[in-house]
Length: 217
Image (cartoon, rainbow, N blue to C red; front, side, top):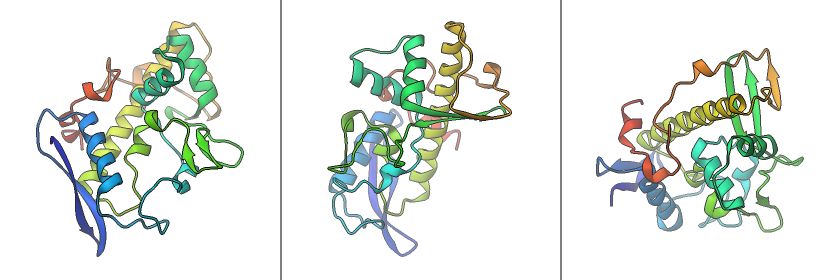
């Protein structure tokens, strides 16, 4: 075991927190640990009176930020291969929501007219792409989370989304396309603002070492 998710009392409620036990631990190890805890660990759901999450879709109506690897995993799950630049742009146009405000960019999973994630099966309350669902979905549990878990999760998601923005801009440049986004306010987006980070050149969460994110918290 390289990452441990353990029960913890958070402000008087049953919650959880995290320990990294091995410096070689990757984001894949982190995801395995939290998925196992969500499935089997003792925790109190605060949003619904359920023991297991399956069939509860309350979190599927919220913003779901995407990392670059999330998009690669989803695209490969749906199409059996990684996307070329033009395919990446097409996927983001149809399956994501890109919001630009000045020099800031936010890329999240698209939602339907009811505000639900486009991959939610509303008849069963389950995910149509469960095995390829984004990191923010895999790591969400409606129980109180400790500071270590929360800070690490936020850092991973933010830097992963930064890499997605960088790849979006690179793909736009490679295709000679005009910058396309779904909503914007005084857009001033520049590729030079988005430097390579821990996710650069990575296609799988097993390639990304957690210690890089601990240094940035």
